[in-house]
Image (cartoon, rainbow, N blue to C red; front, side, top):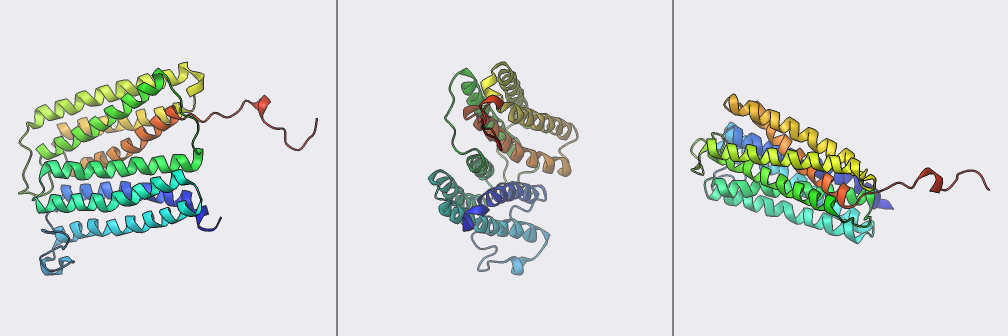
Length: 299
């Protein structure tokens, strides 16, 4: 097996590291450090590091940039392990994760060069969420292989829930772009009403939770989809936590600590809704006890 035996730990490392990137990116926004390094790919004009303009904001932004190299190292190691495993499916997922990291960094660079245009910053965060989803897909393939895809109304419901989750995540970035934590004290906002976009975000959250409840009920009603129950429960729990934090932060004027937890929750939402979709679309059923091969005895 050699390097291939490290595939699962590396897949977990990829998931965790990309979630950490979301949180550190949130720290950049919340400390108004988005332009701590005012250019890209250099930090300051002619310097890769912030030594010419060293302050707390440049250190925070530069540290977040350096985390990208950690992600690349993990991603390259994952590609090598996937290649050595001789599994084409996991290999190509790992390649897409690797390619997504520099793409996400380039989008981040464009956001800096456009003085933190809120619409570009939104795409920057969405790219990280997509990589987290790919990391969950990689883990699913590592543990479950590639079971036959299921069909039927519950699978359609799972896809609808997944799409609603992405609408919630993107709406959250629009709310941020309209509010006080857009990345820098002088960075532009998107010009939308914070009250109206927050209401839209809340409405989408209600839809998302309602669809998840439907998915959970369906998993109990249809025994063939029992493997999806745990994933649906986890997704519902994360949604409830996120909704609670979202409401509290809104009515307490978005304190930094709560927004940080909300950013972490967004990463968990991306992971949990991907898991719920996979567990519904590709349910892995254990054979009944009577059909399992007997161990240690004949006849």
